[in-house]
Length: 474
Image 1: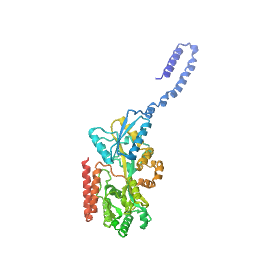
Image 2: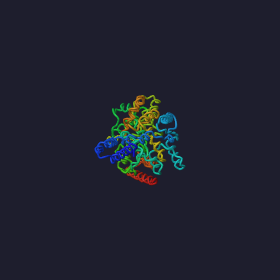
Image 3: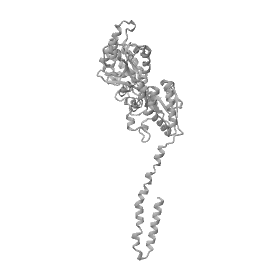
Image 4: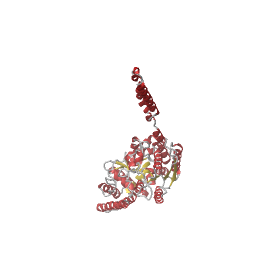
């Protein structure tokens, strides 16, 4: 009870005592004396609303003190501009974050080295707080209780992402960190994508005014380029000119997406590698090869693209700087561009690769500090700075308006931005690393198959192998 209310009550008791002992001639007084008692309570609810003004718990949340938290962040950016960029971003966060959090960034070599380091840390118990990882790696670590579900942080009313912020992340690359049951094991700090590189100048000289919009046009242009090299005066380029065909899992998956399918079933938990769509892709690639419209290279085909030995190659957008350098080395001023994969009906697709980052599940304060760092690190403003160091692509459209200077200096980069909404992502299934190897082996076998029946058997065996690999991780 408030002091004010006690005072009023005492006053009332006093008045009542006086009234009871008064003479009869004072009888009218009680009708006047209680008036202050009636008026004071009428004002008292306004005074009682003081707790509405006391926002102390919310104020404490807004100035949350996490100065005792050091977030250890493991990443795979071990040299050059990328390492410089990570260190600069971490330093800025440490100097400016209002929570007193300190981030300690530790490079772990390449992606495969990082994964090995995390697996070793799981065994030793000496884990970081935040780590990068392949989607299937994060899924595996979640399965053994190491990685936290980010949905609890994303949806936090005070520290989470707004609906607009969440929806701004491209579905394809966000999906790489989303398990079939909706668990979010990671969010992307950037993305790259698997695309075609295409020599537009040479295509025009071959009589094609625009890039291919479907598989029939793709075959026509690839075969025309191969024929041109076979019939020119240079014997050294015979057997080249069309499409550099490497049936790796990333390229195969991209073709499957363009053909309107997927490499997993509707549940997202199991593979579907003997479906009709996968078979159609196999037959298409086999037909391109059998018609002499493809060839292979021993290494990345950047020199072949730059010297008109290839009209089409497949590459990650992370390879753009290397292709630019190859054209410069060759002294070739041809205009080249980036294309999505296009299916029989014109469906366009790219295979999006998100550099995923997850939180190691430790305790409430450490997890919150880790999330606040991760939220800052993946924000559009910070992502724009990171792109300036790394030349990766944004994982959210809000970053586009913040990288104008970078795109002005790198115009071909803008072409990649236009393709990002077409992104699909490979499944975050723990066994996916092993399954990718099986897909590559199977499609090399497809290219050497004698007939369609053999292709059917290869794909059936592939699907069975994938199922076995999945069962081994469950």
